[in-house]
Image: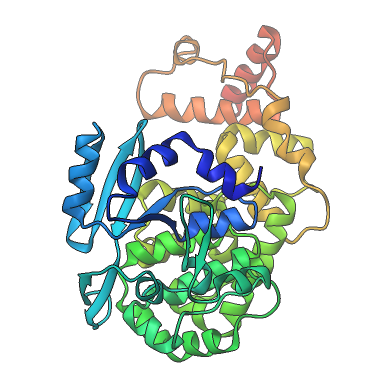
Length: 398
């Protein structure tokens, strides 16, 4: 079974075609799902385009007992729920007046005209319920050649929405080989000032998608050399460190990859929070991975265990990867420590120290902290005799 056949065999897809296709209207799978099916990739989501107006989509879906949500009905988009799965269904559109993202559009019935409104040729494909691919923009040829091109004039398309600069590099990184398309690259550089017009939330979403694509590190270098990445981040980037991180940990998530690419010192986290509207949790994670002891495959066992105890498993792994990016050794051994060594609980209580004549208050807290540090340095002893000796020696020294 071909990938497109498998896509059309999806029971929810079949049901949606049954409801929306026919009786004077035509519905097709559109964009990314078709693109991914043609290269044997599982589509993350399946969107539909249709000649039916939003009102007609809602009427047909409701008559068939399907729930609808008017997620973007003013732009022609209705979400239809089939078997608890959401599918965006968008009416074909044509531009009436174009001025960036706020262009005035009207609903249409011309598939070729609708395709011309899309960003890249590989995203301008349609698949009908019989398995026929409809390509009005040369997307199939570009997909086969692993090439990403804008539909129409690249600079004009970017001016419609400056996020397309980042989208171009994201799709280039995920789907293309070789160098970027010359016209698209030149347009992205020429229109780079438009990046400052974008909301930080949209930039963050696009950057986080880009850094987990197939050629993320190589694409980051291209963008950095062109001066584009610095505009996005508000500072320098280190594409080589991202490349080394991916070699060490191919499954590293987007936050870890952004950290490797952009973090130099802990304070960089504050800049990135403002530039990318990061959450407090993401900001703190970036700050922690750039803070603390240097942890690499060269670190000794005692140093590793002390760091794991103090940092916790997540921060320990982040710190190891952050420090090890650039090292030639395999970091698998040190990264495996959280799974191989059960971090012990500090066995000394406040009551034990109070029994030594220390009253509640700052002195008690300070004494516990000194004992804990000595316990860590001693290799985390747990037997009662060793602990009593450690407590006594610590108390005598202070």
